[in-house]
Amino acid sequence: MTIVELGTKVAALISYTEGTNMFLGTLPSTPDVCAAVYETGGTGPTYALGQAAPIFHNAGAQFVFRGTPNDYAGPRAVAKTAFDGLIALQNVDLTSVRYYFFSPQQDPFPMGPDENGRIRIAFNMLLMKDPS
Image (cartoon, rainbow, N blue to C red):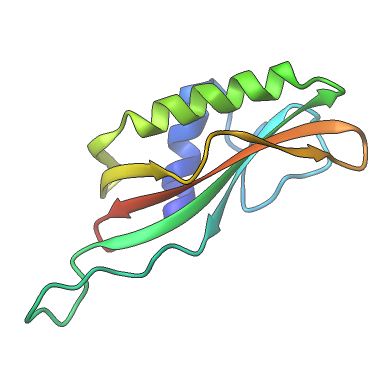
């Protein structure tokens, strides 16, 4: 599953721990400082002429980073570390799936504070990978 592989990689890049401050598909109310990865719509699979099955999947993911109330610099720095680490990856195996490249859809951007005043910074990427 894409978010499991991505969550593991991002947790390593930003020194977070899965299930403690790195989450998959949800951003829980605690802790304040945490991150989440969500699957989003990609661009659809890539087929080759004469092939019944896709040769690549073009998946999408959103990465969200949250800090303490009114702290913009903290989650922005963590998001930038993850962003830079992911775009540097090319032709790499994450668990048992080959990822060919990560294509950012924009630079990290502010999503605004949550209901508790905690700043959220996010970015979206498209990723070309082997079917899994």
